[in-house]
Length: 111
Image 1 (tube, one colour):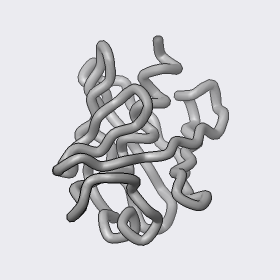
Image 2 (cartoon, rainbow, N blue to C red):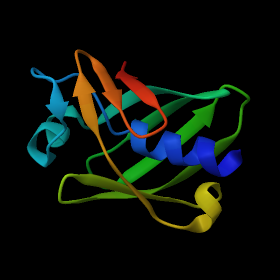
Image 3 (spheres, helix red, strand yellow):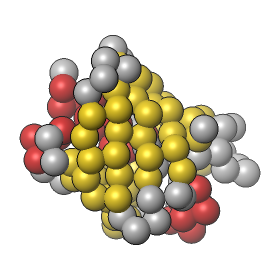
């Protein structure tokens, strides 16, 4: 469950509202950062802060905290936290529908 939550956090933290529905492309993503995002996945909500310099940090609704690094690989966001995600880099393709950012198992909104 922790891996699932962290994966959702990582991917969703990087998203924000766009003008059109569909894939969230690299140029669109760059317009959203720096920023704070509210990520919701099954069983957890996470507030994630993403910086332009590649830093990322998050706090779950249960008070768990972590930080790490992010980068873009094409139209995927890749995240590696110090504790979450078993210390492994995870990449996720993001899409947007209205003001909701979606990954494979989460939704997010820019705050």
